[in-house]
Length: 166
Image (cartoon, rainbow, N blue to C red; front, top):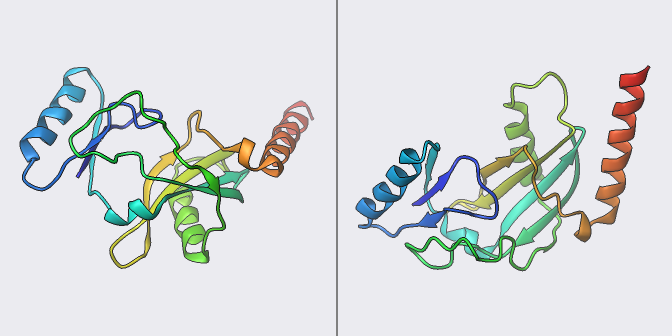
């Protein structure tokens, strides 16, 4: 399983635990709760070792995606100095991945499309995409790997400003 704070960046204060290590995982969750933070517990998806996918949406429209290597490489280790997005590279998601990401965004209680969002996915044992995280506050949108995504974002901000001043 994976224990992590609900609000974090770059897998900070996050660790995965092997079967039989529930007491360690519970201690980790208790530490987060004692700090006044919300703890999340997720199943560890072994196929994340093939790469975690991050799908970026601008104004509700799919923009671009990356795939990165796994971050939690050692069980039971909380390493706040690890590289947060190792091996990030451009990625072409499947239709199933885009559909799963859209479904996650549709569940967000927001009036209209979000200016930006990132949906992090991995594959389950049946190789179906599942949501790991929904990044809505200050996410890394990987613009250095996709300059067209940055152009789309700038245009979305400009359109919002035009709408706000009209």
